[in-house]
Image 1: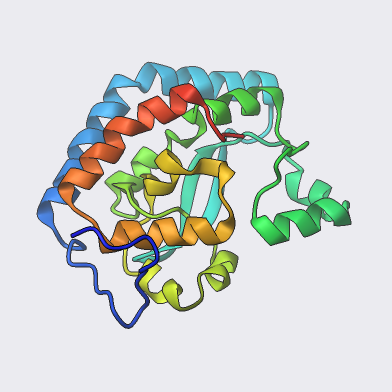
Image 2: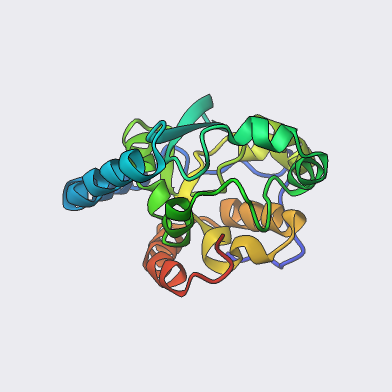
Length: 216
């Protein structure tokens, strides 16, 4: 049952019933394997491109939280190798990042990185996180441990589910909503989950990527 836009769950009123649904996990495994095999040529091409044009490490490991605790989510590196030190030396940009955990126009992103982010191809390595059971194809946003404070009472609920490669926010909001609205979208997904909703989000994700609306 779909609830009102203003009714979002807290840790006290929601225990997601889909956590151990074999159908959801089976769908994750089947689709991720098919995508890894089908896009193996593209994965290899991006590996070569990042190494030749951007040099430095090919992959970026982002420390995030999920149902299984903290883990490293894989992405193709889209920023300069010294991104953290570069940001630390610029207090104004660092303050913006600490407020939103994003920079609207991030000078640290490389030319190739811009294209990878615009097309969401930088997230393809997360298919391996899905296979390992750390992530799901569809789920709440992937967040860092520092972001848990932004979820308030919802943080407990968020940590009972696997973060998704795509989700409600990625399809219907992306970067054009406030952080508070992102939290509400994550909680709405958890409360109203169904296999049909997952399939709908999976079908809408390529359209959102092609449009590139709100992506940076």
